[in-house]
Image (tube, rainbow, N blue to C red; front, side, top):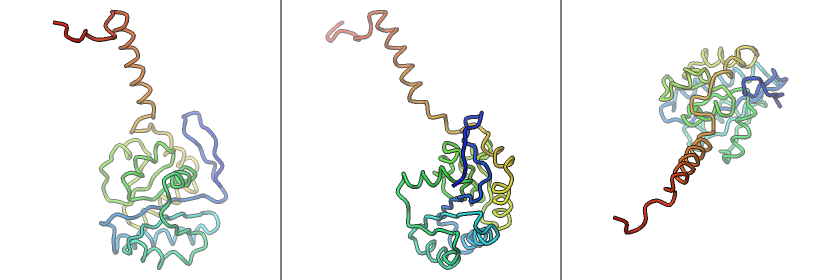
Amino acid sequence: MPSRESSGTGCVRIRIPECATVLVTLHRRESFGPPLERALGAIRRLAIEKGDRVRIVFPVHPNPNVAGPARRMLEDLPNVELRSPLDYPEFLEVFSRSRFVLSDSGGVQEEAPTLGVPVLIARETTERPEVLESGWGILVGTDPERILVESRRLLDDEEAWRARCSGPNPFGDGFAARRIVDVLSAEWDARRGLGLAAGPEVGAT
């Protein structure tokens, strides 16, 4: 399992591990057919190239357009785990312990900065440009060479990996609810100090 420690930026830092986990989620309809097979080919090449230095976890969507090619191209590899879809807590556990994730999911793009995990986006465009601007995401599409180049960089280059984890979370820091409570509490205290906390009397004219 990757070794993790807290960094000064608040990001969880992973030292280059002997065996790194890579999470994969691929399921979008526009990827069916040749695009998906290109991405799976890159995963296969990465698994063979890295051997026991990498563990690829792929919760496979049950759609036969995904499950069929995934099994055909990957199930013979000992370092690729083709799993049934995970429940959300288990998915987050694997996600949070991954070196990076390769995904075409919009939700994963939003979750990656919160979990401190870079994401290679297996799409040609994204509706979440803030992921790219903050450095957490890289558009690789389904081009095998782009996937392999960026995967190797994140696996082998600690400085490059750390740079991808140094940006702010573009979707917030998780403390919005606390700030809302603080604002409401301050407003309540101010109104109470003016004798307005109870609001106008019922029937008052």
